[in-house]
Amino acid sequence: MSSVPPSGRTDPAAHKRYLEYRDKHGYFGKMTPLLTMAQFEALEAEFTVLEAKGEDARDDEEAARWDEVAKLLFRD
Image (cartoon, rainbow, N blue to C red):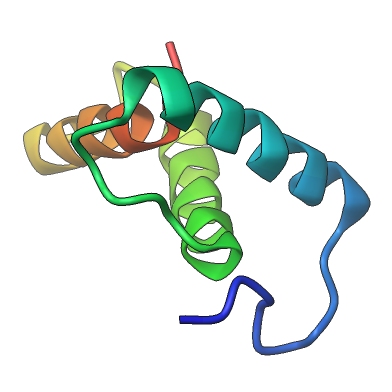
């Protein structure tokens, strides 16, 4: 799978966050597959939407998904 998003363009800030993710993956994620850049960007976008809702506004399903995505992205 390609690490370049379908648009062929990567935001420099997103690329930097992806490189940070890869560094963390090397230490914390040895038992999980490494995400491609496109997968990372999609999960990061989903995380941002769920994060913006706030802890009190997320329903149970959204809270569970937020936890899952946060773990995949190594977010606190």
